[in-house]
Amino acid sequence: MSRGRRAPRNRGVRPLAGHPRLRRLLPYLLAAAVVLALVLLAQPALLARAASRFQPIYAPAVAALSLLYYGLQGLRWHPLLRAAGIRLSWSRAVVLNLAGQAAGLLPGGELTRAVLVSEVSGKELADAVSTITVQELISTLVVIAVAAPAAATRPLAALGVGLALAGTLLALLVLAWGRAFEVVLRLVGRLPLLRRLAPELERLRDQTVRLLTRWDTLWWSALNVLQVAVTVTMFWLLLRGLGLGLGWPVAALIYAAAHLAGAVSLSPGGLGGFEAACVALLLGFGVPLDLAVAAALLQRLADKGLGTLFGVAAYAWARRAYHLEARRVVLGRVRDGGGSDRRASREA
Image (cartoon, rainbow, N blue to C red):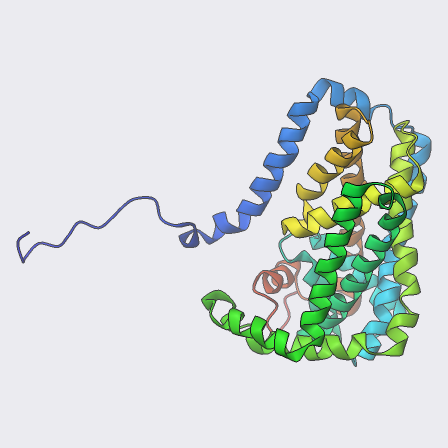
């Protein structure tokens, strides 16, 4: 090659990292592909007929339980916020928790309520995130516990519940044991995209451990138990509305396993992972494919669907009442990891 000529630039397909918008869309595309595959497998006509079997008399109870679930989540959150030094009234905690559900199906959407609380209270975001970490860890343990009775007589289900419990306990061990957490920090430090989060993770861990070791954290966990019971009952009523005679313990097992599968999938709101696991488990209990898919989709609609509607209404009210930033600004902070900086001026 002559010295004066440059090698031709590779104009092939750029890596995914060069397409941030595509990277953000990828989890939704994968989740949509899973849901679409389930719909096609069940055959749309048979699926529509199965969904039409749902008895409308159950609809008001399902909607009320969905709203009650998020109300209990906000009530449980309130004492954790106060323990973290974030002084908000219980009514504000409930409203901001509900408002955060407007972004429940976005990547990192669970952080939205922490961003809102951080903005209203003026406290560091890491303090609010630590309360969500504790709340989710306790709720996960409760979800595993409600699945145990039905799993005890089913070896494969018992294995799954045992693995989920081991994973949750491992997360608690990493948080509680300093050396284990240092190993995690070193691993994070080697990843360019996560390196800047190391100081925030250290603060988050300190605050999380402090909350987990408080006696009142255990005392208020009764609300976590009630919250899980409400959402399992909602799922059980959906199954009853479709004419499926599965008992509450079996519904608890199916919901718990699907919930954990959705969490492990790391998709927004567990989308795709929850539905696939829920359908597989219902098939294992002898439910026809069309009814299994209908049950999974109705559960999604009752949970995240109604939750998003409640959240949008709550956010519209909270934005005026608490002078919150514009929704796109809040969601931008969620996507960026919710940096602790504050804007000097608020958007109208």
